[in-house]
Length: 82
Image (cartoon, rainbow, N blue to C red):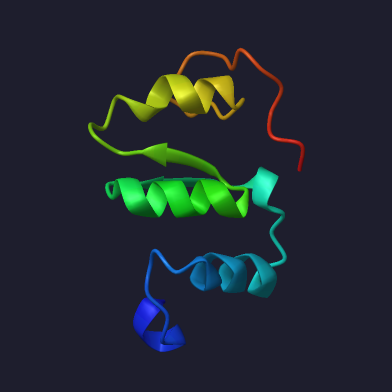
């Protein structure tokens, strides 16, 4: 998307464009990235932003957000309000 939009992360404009184009409310989305700066900017835009360090590390955060998958335990919080 970056090249097509002529915007690069961590420019907040790329996150705003994505949210606007697909009519996504920031609290209804989760962004996971390796780059701490991208995670920080995404959080500043209002997304649930999680650092990706290891494939297993985001799991507790996703469960807390109420986002189970086939291989995860039951959520400990209600799902995102969307």
